[in-house]
Each structure stands twice: as structure tokens, then as C-alpha cells.
Image 1 (spheres, rainbow, N blue to C red):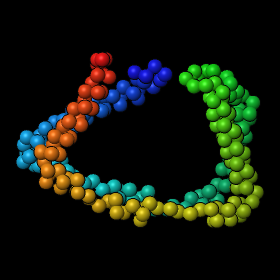
Image 2: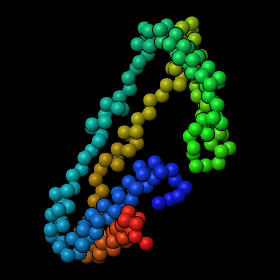
Image 3: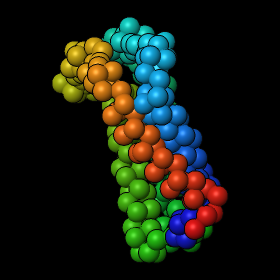
Length: 209
């Protein structure tokens, strides 16, 4: 356990990571021993488990651009008023009621106080700038929607990663083929590496020294 880490963070992240590596170390140890001892059975097991699931078709709808401009123009005045009111309120709260020093004291972050205050104040100013930008957008929506439309026409660009990463959707079986060609060497290598992981994280989990 790391003494400098907050107990809640230690409980949620560190111990969960320890259990994850311990369990998968045991699985890796079993796979490695299986490869070294019984190649045929493990080959059938891998053949049964290897299923290629492509997300390309199921996520196609994410890569289709959708124009919300007509709906925004139809309700531009209510949307503009909402933007202005919500952004004005958040700007007032961030300016008048958020004290970075008080927030840093309440959080009890295990870090230098000046650094925590600087981070909180930077986030506060980031949100203030965003709120002021929302007020400007609301005013443009109400009074000069054509100007906002021209800005959107110049800035709106649709970038889809599907064409850039389509090669990643192909199966690559080089590693599997190498393991099938050298089952014992691969099995003992995996088993020894997994055993080291099991021992290390087992000692951390069960408090052995």
C-alpha cells in the first residue's frame, strides 16, 4: 500500500489493480503450463476462444454527420435566452462564490497547497471563459444568427477515423502462429512471467513480506 495515496483512491484503484494482475497472472500461468504440457488441447481451446468481433459495422452510425442547424435556427431565441441565463448565472457563481483556497482546504488533496490552489483557480477561469463564450453565442443566436451561421460554416469540419484505421479491423495472427510453431518455448516463457506476476501481486494482496 502506498502511504501517500488517499485511502479511497487506494481502495478503488490500487487494490483493484492488484486483484486484476493477480487473477490474470493465474490465468496466464495456467495457459503457459497448458501450452508446454498439452499442445493439442490448448490449440483446440484457442481455436474455440478466438472470435473476431468487429466494431466497424456496429459503430457506423457514429461516423455519419448529422446537421442540427435547422433545429437550432427554429428555436434560436429560446436557445439563446437559455444560453445567456445559464452562462450568466455560472459566471456570477464562479466569480463571487468560488474561493480556490477554501475549495483546496475542503478537498484535502495530498499535494502542495499552492499547486492545488493553482489547479482549482485555472479550472475556475477556464469555466469562466467558457461561460462568457456561451453568452456571446446566445447573443449571436438571438440578434445576428447569420453571423453565427457563417462562423459555423467555416469552423465545422467532419473528421471520421473509419477511413484512417480501417486496416486495424483486419485480424493479425502472427503471434498466434509463432506460439503454435514453438508451443513449449512460448508456454514456459508465459508461465514463468505469469508466475512472477502472481508471486509479486499475491504478496501485495495478502500482506506477505
